[in-house]
Structures are given as C-alpha cells and as structure tokens.
Image (tube, rainbow, N blue to C red; front, side, top):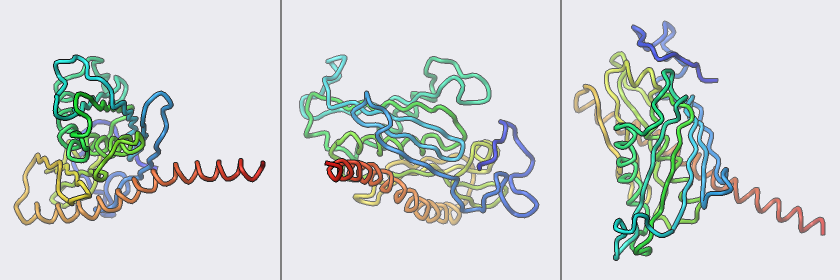
Length: 255
C-alpha cells in the first residue's frame, strides 16, 4: 500500500535505507490500477488508481458542437475538461475551476489531439471530462493516460494510445514517477507523454534545475517507465473484452 504523506515539506526525500519516503526504489512506479467501461451513461469511460491518485474519465461524442460558433467545417474538435474535486487535496479546493485546471485542460487537449482522426468528423466534437477524486502528484500525466483509455473505450478512431509519466530529481538523485510531496519538495519535475504510433513526445514540460546530461537520462528513464505503463493500458482494454467474451460464451453454453 502506498504511504499517505500529508502536504508538508520534509527535509529529506530518501530514508536512511536508501528508499524513498513511500518505500519505493528510485525507478520504481507507484501501484497502478486501470479499468474501462466504468460509467454506463458515457460513450466511453475509464478509472485509474495511480498511487494515491484516483481519477474518473468520461468521453462523449461525436456530437454537435455547443456553442455552434466553435464548430469547424473541415474537422471535428476535441474539448478536455480537467477538474479536481473539492476534497481531492488536503486543503479544501474551491468548486469553481481555477487557472491551473484551465491550463491543464489545454495541455491535455494538445496531448491527445494527435491521436484522433478529427478530419473524419467535420462540425462535430468529442468531449472528455476528467474528475480527480484524490490527488497525489502527477495528475496531468495520470489524466492523459486515463483519457486515452476512455477514448479507446468509446470506440473513437485513434492512431494509438498516449501514455504519460513524470520523472525528475530529488535530493540530487534522478527518480521515476514523482509523488505529490516529491513534486513539491524536489529539485526538478519533468512530466512527459508519448504517442505510440510515432513514438514522439506529445507532452514535455519542465520545472526546476538539472543539467543536460541529467535531462537526457530522465528521458531514458521516462521511456522505460512509459513502456511498462502502456502494457497496463493495453491489458485494461483487453480485460474488458475478455470478460465480454467469457460472459457470452458462458451464456451460450448454458443454452
């Protein structure tokens, strides 16, 4: 079980035994659980637990654009709405979306757009609603990952999935998958996402200080972690259809 750490800044981010505060090795991912088809009223949906992060995502579309003036005659549009619940952080968050939520909504839109064949849907929109129920660092990466699953679950034509993770530097050491306290108290944070159809980064942000050699090493660490997370995504999608197949086969055998 991941260790729940309050929103405080400790002096050291490594324990005396060399482990991180939540018991992980430097390049170990937090526990990850993914599931698709969790919301019946959505065209596609997914749920993700990543460490202490708990996130739901719902996809609707293709459907008419409202307001109509946002519609494009030559292609569809993607709209992403990232929201954090008022109880998702230690201090109660205001219900109204803040500047950070609007910024992350735009970042996620730019991250996900390359996946979609929007030219096939002129005048239509796909809307992605993401609700962070519990937050503990790396939410934009977790949201990009779960949103790609929800889009796939909705049957939206896609070039591939996108997978995201945050790597960085704490106490002078490079680490993979920063927790919330490591993100705030660490030396550097590098969220990144990869689109698998061309293996290019569709999200790359940086905050903090590190040299170019460390930056290059971080990208290698990110690629290794992203490969593992991508496998979990694929298994989540496969598991849904395996369950459907087993249910159908079981019902057919009973007859």
